[in-house]
Length: 150
Image (tube, rainbow, N blue to C red; front, side, top):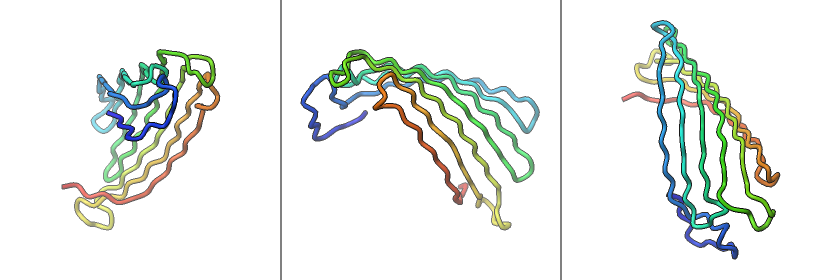
């Protein structure tokens, strides 16, 4: 649920307050005891108060992972298509988006000999190509941290 407490957009078709429904199914294939592929299909329905913000999203995702001794690496790519229900009154057309993501994750287990403490890192990029250029964007993400497994 997306809750917008003080929506100040005058055009009700653009109101963003929404109930969101999401389903995803995946299949894991082991290529070897220490590596595999996971494929998945996802569907999201964003039921916004504003019909120009209501949309359906269809997504495909593929992840490859490899575990070797204390090292784990995973590469994930996905593509999603978003189809909006109504015309955006500001831009005069109904929005549709093509969303692509690519992420690389790495984990080193038991860092510095400390049991259950792991070094984790993550890098990725999100692209959104919209038929309304205002909504097109690129996001880049990188992080390094430590995790503890209970």
